[in-house]
Length: 222
Image (tube, rainbow, N blue to C red; front, side, top):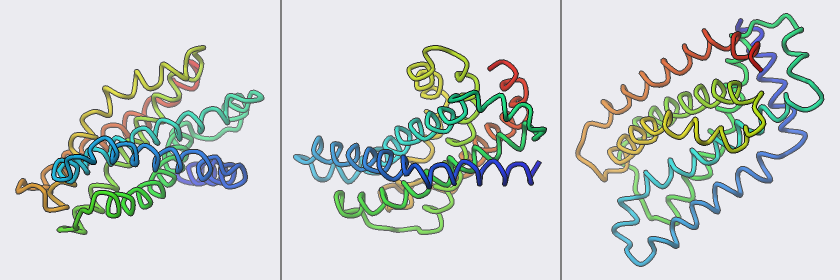
């Protein structure tokens, strides 16, 4: 399973590296979303600082939707998904590989968005360990749920519009918990951010385990 996951992740990342869709479209989109949020709250600077963690994770969520749609658009073209079915790869390995590729792309976006939050919103770091841990767990949750629901919607005609409708309610708890963890990490809240990180770990484990167990059936349905 792990060998298959590495193969699929490497394949997806090589495709993205050659097409540069993530670099030329997803990253600028995320930065523009963050910039628009900054303009919307510019008249109330204290409110902007308080809202910075939530705005950051909303931008990550929107970018994740694009990354997941791109990941399955690759498989939908020229019947590539049939090649995956006939390749003999473990479905669980395919799921983990695609989730890893989406997660790595999101981590790159998050690094750039973090710089944007510091520059635009003038936030200050209070807990680097909490910030990184919650970001990793949140990314795993977003990637795991995104790939599972991306496979579910791949065989549908309206998948481009249906995927956001399916994912938004599922990822709402992740965005909420990540926002609270980052508020604590940025010194904007006195709450225990590690408790929110633990909750993020639970969501990530549930989404990844669910994807591993169900991805074979989801591929057959598509």
